[in-house]
Image 1 (tube, protein in one colour):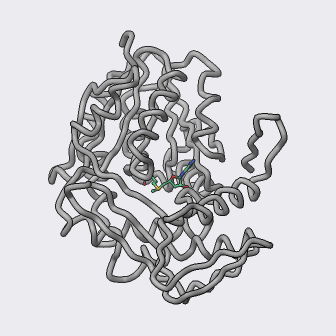
Image 2: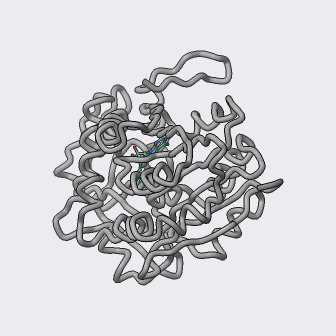
Length: 330
Ligand SMILES: C[S@@+](CC[C@H](N)C(=O)[O-])C[C@H]1O[C@@H](n2cnc3c(N)ncnc32)[C@H](O)[C@@H]1O
């Protein structure tokens, strides 16, 4: 269970973190927001697995193409040494179905490592650990539940060389300035020569991107609306999900897919003693999914001590895994 401390050292329980993030988002004006990291309760994690299997959701298949068919190129680009013992830390691994191909390749090639998945979702970690025990029983797995922004600070506990995996365009849910800060902080916890494997979705036409965020079966809509159910259940709110609908937008010139929940009627919603009013048609912004190219990545890395060492794309050039290295040595 995740705990955090305030500046004064007072312990905050997880539901209080959730509550304050929700209240802050719904108070923001003129655009109400809700935090996307809370999509992943047990139901949200299952829905995301269903999203990854959707015909419209090309991202997972494209990155899977890299992990399954370009494993050797990935391992070469990571430039690891067989005599060293590595920590492979994955931030937000979800079900790990791509990572397992890399893990098998590394172990099969005689590399030594511990695998440390860090995920906010305990149910995602449980499923991942069970899958790895079955598929790779010899692998040392050290799962950690919690917010990776918090867990990052504990990375520097030993001197093992590190590879940090951030796959599935997870960073796309952050603004570019936030990603810069995140990577700079990550860099502070790494040693020269440590690597980051950063999987990102590439900027492309609206006809390809938009359906991935508003699929015909309505699974993405269900994923978005599940956040309201979670707020009702865990924070005692009274959202009526039938009075909201999912909407997504994307323009290639901007390169950011955006998800919203639209209030279908004029209504009020209570969370404890707090009441929030919605106009008919008013939106709650729930998620951004940024798309990238080399120029955007180099802009993000510019204020950090991390640089691009290699880039591997899928066979259709939809997705890229960048190998980033902390400057200093290799
Ligand atoms: C979009 S899924 C991607 C999963 C995986 N990386 C992949 O490529 O398939 C995002 C994952 O990150 C986790 N996650 C999201 N925000 C997080 C945070 N702030 N800290 C830790 N885990 C987080 C979610 O629980 C979920 O498992």
